[in-house]
Amino acid sequence: MRIVIVGVGRMGFSLAQELDSEGHEVSVVDPRADRAELAHTRLDVMAVAGSGCSRDMLRRAGAEDADLLLAVSGSDEVNIVSCLLARELGAKKRVARIESQSVKDVYDLRGVLGVDEFVTPRQITVARLLRILTVPGTTESAEFAGGRVILRAIRVEETSPLTAAPLSTVRELMPDVFLVTVVRRGEEFVVPTGAFRVEVGDVIYVVMRAPVFGRFLSTFKLRRPTSRRVFVLGASEVGLEFCARLAERRHDILLLEEDRAACERAAERLPRAVVIHGSSLDRDLLLDLNIGESTFFGLSGSVEANFAGAVVAKRLGADRAIVLASEPEQVALFDRPPIDAVVNPITVSVGAMLRSVRAGRVILLFRLARNEFEALEIEAEAGSPAAGKPLKDVKFPRDAMVAAVIGKDGARVATGDTVIVKGDYVIALARSRAVNEVVRLFSVPGAALTQGMQT
Image 1 (cartoon, helix red, strand yellow):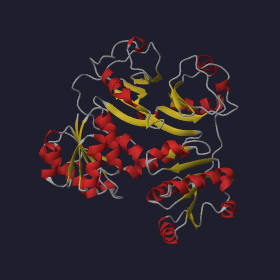
Image 2 (cartoon, rainbow, N blue to C red):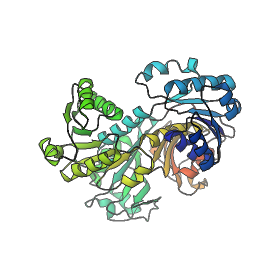
Image 3 (cartoon, rainbow, N blue to C red):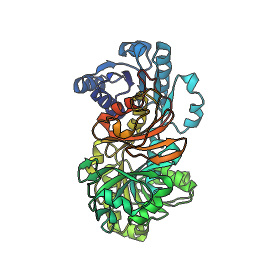
Image 4 (cartoon, rainbow, N blue to C red):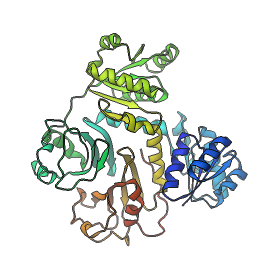
């Protein structure tokens, strides 16, 4: 696929790196010559030093023949104009990154502006944080088929019967079907067989029908107490929007901010939150604020402050600690106890954009397990290689599987005897390097790029 990326900041560079590694023909455009040169030398992609609002620069980057243009600069205006010009030049599909608070107004103008899809990093990040908060006991989550099928990442506790026997035996403890798709053990990720034994401290990525989840947590003693009181560190844009969404859900919110001016602005914007000026390292202050009765979110612009605050919060009794990382590389660095989850806006946004790159009828795409795996919802097409035969007879790439199927008879966890037919929605999970091969199994050659959005 021929792909043009406008803007080679942190997000653009991450996209270029990912797409180049997958073998796509990538070119980048950025007004800063040093950024363009870095992308060219580090990634060996074609680079144009110039404005994404210039027809000539877009033409030089190959927009006339591009299958996809991704406009991800730090300017909403540049991204929209780039898409508009790219449409005139002939780019087949155009995706724009938008940070504006008035995104809803812009959505109605997609056709006029030449944008097929908008990606909103702040909203995607806040949605991820809300899922972590509202789904008890999980570190990552994804929903498919309108929420009928779910994927949850859960850390296994000492008391859990999941550790008592191999997975094939453990499944008999519960009448409802579930599938452990991936297990994280330390720094390694494993696709388990029926003989695999889960250990204390493992993080399991399990797929099931949504109504089954509560029973699963109870059966395997994985339910953890959660508080409706949320302690947020940092009046960043993500922190403020997260608090605003929490207020809509009637959570008790306490926002701590070190900068006095930012603290005052936050108090004006969040009338339903308690806004405090102070440091997350002030142990006495945190004790006075009863942080032990809260869930902690470190959402400031400093990952070091977020991490340090999370460690102190957990020591003082916070039920969970979730931190925001500014760089993708920091996820692996901080994603370990006592931290319960790490979210990086670049990573979740790149995941949203990758759905546009996958051929075939990819409806949703989630990146999981430190980006090692992708979970997808794919509409199976008639005539595709995997259609009309039992899954046990389909040759899947290594570390790839079908976890569930949504058909006319409802949602069900997949088995080897499951047969996929035209119109079924397939929930598949695979290591990132194998995803395109999995998509091809359920697509016909030459399938058009899918429209839609991941959150």
